[in-house]
Length: 310
Ligand code: FDA
Image 1 (cartoon, rainbow, N blue to C red):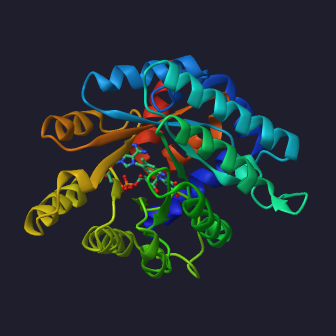
Image 2 (cartoon, helix red, strand yellow; image 1 turned 90 degrees about the vertical axis):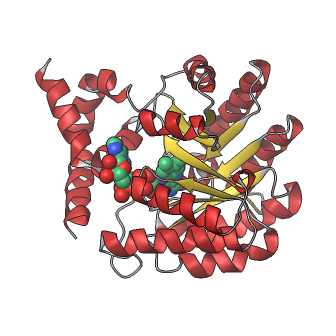
């Protein structure tokens, strides 16, 4: 409950236009702990750097609340450029996309623009043997994202497109089960948005417990699971679970955010686990940065100290 209140307070303040303007001016040097840079080259360099420690990258061009259809398509064009640049740098493209940023919910001649642009992006990634994960956004988008995921897996195959389930939503266990026929590649997360009690567990202990249930069920069903958390207790439990159930290290990977628990990322990779860091980049970093601060007061302190230093 306290976690919910903290998150609500931070996100409510962060959404105020005056706060955003001040933050954009002053916080970029601090945001760079969590964001690789503003251009493609910085993102590619971050992947190459992490690869030296045996950690793979998951590239994410930042962009939310993109309104006009033309902007959505231009955003998708930039993701295509990113995929080409990764391939040219010798990296198998692995990118994450928010369907809202490429036009989900906007009609384009009878087809959903988000679906149309997602097809272009996944088609391009597939050309290079790459992968696209459809990020999960706030709960009004869950149904449409899962529906579009089903369509896209049908067209491109589960080896080239995956999606995300959030353990704070009451519905996620059922959603997971309903996708089993696709043999889906799913990233499990706790959930980063401000959601009402009508749809999401208000208590962290329930969110954590549901997280374990989701991961275990997905692995037991024989599917590929991206265990995306920095929660060391859960990571240890997952390690024990896979050992006890004879689940191979090829059936899952640990995923964490760029700049967070770098020590843990390295040590897991050194133990022979697959590890992937989610690497956001781009000029539109503010909303992403606000969510990271909302996740833990420790990050708010990090920002406060940085601001005080000048
Ligand atoms: P929790 O919040 O319980 O934190 C566990 C411990 O990790 C904390 O005690 C702290 O030590 C550390 N920690 C966590 N967050 C930290 C931070 N920001 N800074 C410093 N330390 C931190 N969400 C979503 O809704 N849709 C999505 O598509 C995705 N995608 C995604 C991809 C990847 C690779 C990750 C790792 C996460 C996401 N998320 C997400 C975000 C996710 O929902 C969640 O908000 C964060 O991962 C934080 O939750 P944890 O699981 O780390 O646990």
